[in-house]
Structure formats: structure tokens, C-alpha cells
Amino acid sequence: MTTIHRVLAATTLLASLCACSTAPQSSIGLIDTNRISSNWPKFQNYENQLSADAQAIDRSTKSPREKDAAHAALQRRFQEAQAELSNDVSTAAKQVAADKHLTYIFTRQYVGYGGVDITADVEKILQIQEKPSPTP
Image (tube, rainbow, N blue to C red; front, side, top):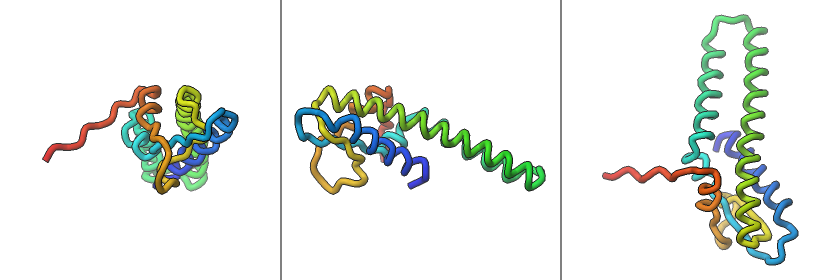
């Protein structure tokens, strides 16, 4: 699991817990953040662009000092992208939690069983279309 996946999962979990802690029922919702990140073009675009930029910096003939400055700027862009993506998922999760009267939202990766899977509802709000499975 990449750093951006872990941060997305943790941020979604924390924001959803805070937002949903006052709901009247004790239902638990689950979000599959791996599925969201693998199907969400916005996430993939950020990941591809940041990865390409990091490789370009590493391959460049700049001085070590210039490379360090470029890596620092890239790290800031990475953090901004993380914040934006996490905010989008958290906002969608809060909306689904309110609509379904859920008390808690957890990421699927950290729950063994139980709960209501709301991944499809979050994907619908984020306008994510699941990729079809390859045919043999």
C-alpha cells in the first residue's frame, strides 16, 4: 500500500468518525479505499503525474541542492493532492453516512467482517465508474 493510499485511508477514517459520531443509530459503514483509488481517474492522474515528476527530478542533471529543492516542491504538491483527495472522499462519506444514518465509517482494509459497504455510494458521488474485469 503506497503512502498516499495509507494517508487516504487514515484521513477518510478519522474524518468520517468525527462527522458521524452524533448520528442516531449505531450502524457501521465500510469504504474500500483500494477500490476507490484503483478506479478513480483523479487519484490515478495525481499518482501518475507525481511519480513522473519524481523520476524526472531523479534523472535530471541538476545539482544535488537543486534536486533537493525540486523534491521539496514535489513533496508540497503531494501533500496538497493528498489533502484534496482525502477531502473529496471524506465529504462523500459524510454525505452517505447522513443519508443512511450511519454512526461510524471505517475503511474495509481494517475491518474483518460486518458493517455496510458504502463504497459504491461514495463512488457514485465522486462520479467513479468501476473498471470492468478483464475477460479471459
